[in-house]
Image 1: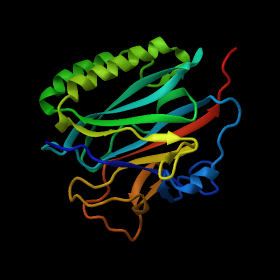
Image 2 (image 1 turned 180 degrees about the horizontal axis):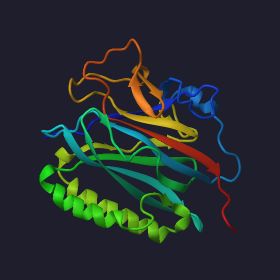
Image 3 (image 1 turned 45 degrees about the vertical axis):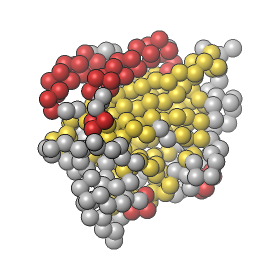
Length: 265
């Protein structure tokens, strides 16, 4: 049995830069670092809006017997109904990929996943990385073709309405139930809590770039820490002077943007 891997959340320290400069190398810090509290948070009503965009997905290795990987990244998040903010929903989006070991998955760069997620105080962010078995690949591609043909599924916008979100979530959940039902296929299954005012050791919710990384690599089972990693031009790299046998582990960089939200009266 293949156990699910532990992941942790890092945060890219941009210093005084409002946006990352492609020519610069940026350090990572823990998403629970106390310095995160100094990052501004939107004023206004208790409800806020969140946009989530994928920046890059690096696959060191998935637990298969080849160097070619086909998989699905499922992202869950909780939102509130814009027409009734007391009504909470969990929605899901799925991003499929094909990539060789130790490469970045094509088609992930700057891919919008969620728009106008409405929340109060915190969000639960579910990250599930699922490998598609080679013997199910043909069936999976047929299902994938159907899902890709549904307009509006690539980026889920809460302001388009809850019924549409529920349809999208049902399709993604159905794929996971079929193609991720074996424990060996599920590489990540984590639910980080991002909080406006977190308790000690918990992750802050702020505008910026987060990095979810596996705490040990597949090839050598060596530990990977946020302090070993840097961010440059959308990619995660090992810091100069640091040697990790086997290299960096599976990791995902994504951007979060927070804004105010005023419910319609």
